[in-house]
Image 1 (cartoon, protein in one colour):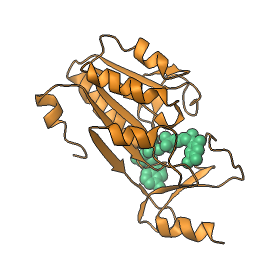
Image 2 (cartoon, rainbow, N blue to C red):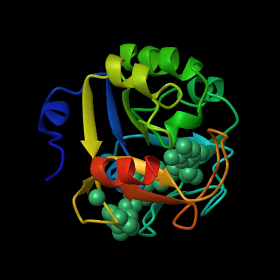
Image 3 (cartoon, protein in one colour):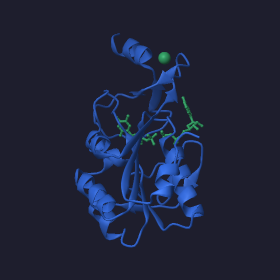
Length: 192
Ligand SMILES: Nc1ncnc2c1ncn2[C@@H]1O[C@H](COP(=O)(O)OP(=O)(O)O)[C@@H](O)[C@H]1O
Ligand SMILES: Cc1cn([C@H]2C[C@H](O)[C@@H](COP(=O)(O)O)O2)c(=O)[nH]c1=O
Ligand SMILES: [Zn+2]
């Protein structure tokens, strides 16, 4: 098992869990796995994603392997608090795209007893910390870093290499636009 829920399930209290890593590292699959288990335990679960993320579906959170779970797309982090009253478990995908308000919102939810599970890219294509993710990682009760497989050499990949010419930090995409690489393979591409 990748993550042990034992502590949480025996001491049900508010907490913040962060799942981070590069693209294709399994963040969304791990988020969906934890949320589906909470639903099996008959807990009240709400899942949010930024409205800009319409890659696979406008409504659902969908992994690169086509696992999915229904979600509510929101324009800004403020809506998450408004829509989370009476909820026991809140899931948030693609957290890197949210405004910094999400930091206080996660803390408020956890302080009032909600389990908050946040998934997002820790770094952008330039290896720079992405949006609110570094702060979310520092305030989290638990951080899980997952890894993709480097498409060049088969080692663990930490980085998302952008394949298209575009300097903007936000550029939605999948395999045509990004590939996961290990440190050594990423650095080889960026010193040419
Ligand atoms: N290079 C790769 N390394 C690992 N998984 C990959 C790779 N390329 C495609 N995948 C697929 O991506 C899935 C993970 O998808 P997902 O959970 O959506 O990742 P993330 O949310 O981190 O981008 C894996 O189970 C696997 O089927
Ligand atoms: C590295 C990087 C990624 N993005 C975009 C590309 C995808 O639409 C999402 C990440 O999705 P995943 O579930 O982690 O595969 O983020 C971006 O906008 N900028 C970047 O630097
Ligand atoms: Zn490599």
